[in-house]
Length: 303
Image 1 (cartoon, rainbow, N blue to C red):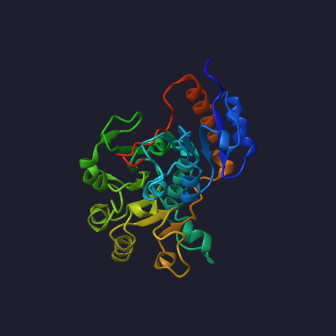
Image 2: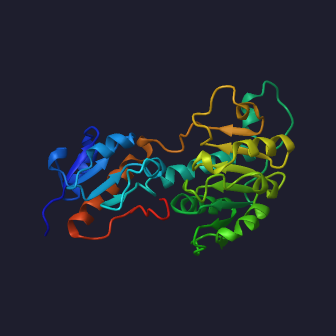
Image 3: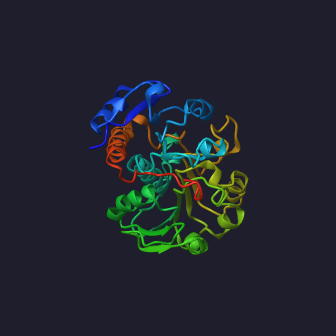
């Protein structure tokens, strides 16, 4: 068997990540001795400074890689992997939470100071259109199935998504928007998806449909969303991510009655930490065995 890969955890040591490296057959070492990096930080320039010709693999601990691509840190000289899919379960749960809150009119109920009229609806019998149906979307399909929700899965390739009622490619976006009671954004942020949901797309949605975004705020045009809400084009929006982010105090979205905002908390390290450690362990083992790594970043696709 090949020698144990020498892996540095940066920018600071994490005992749990070092334990995952050992569990995968690797050896945690200082940067000067490393051939691979597990990067648990946020600063692209700090990571760039840590790269040397000896580094042949970098594992990022986040699923979204746009900041690293924008900074030009990710290159073709070594293998780069993201944590794509690691947090799919918690994020999918949060999407269901937002859908249920919207369906049962909880934003108004929670703040009410009098009994008020009845209202709300079931998820059963509704249709959820998932824009960018990868790991999160696939997990969401599984969670929605017991509720009796039909699902439309849209992907970059148009591949058949297990469990989805319909699977569509990029040219099917209009069909998804017009057919869905819930439009759920789970796509990565790439040049092709920035402001993918703008004025024309929001105008295609059903009048009572809700937009749910648990991916990246840049995928939705905020100005167009405010117009759609004010004009009643859509029923509401449930947002765990926004553009800008953090959403400033006093921003108009805070004052829209049919908007639910959570501060990018669909997943937290405590929720997906074990899955991240499992991913690191697996990739270290794969590196040692000369096998393909999980979550390889494709520079052409942008994720």
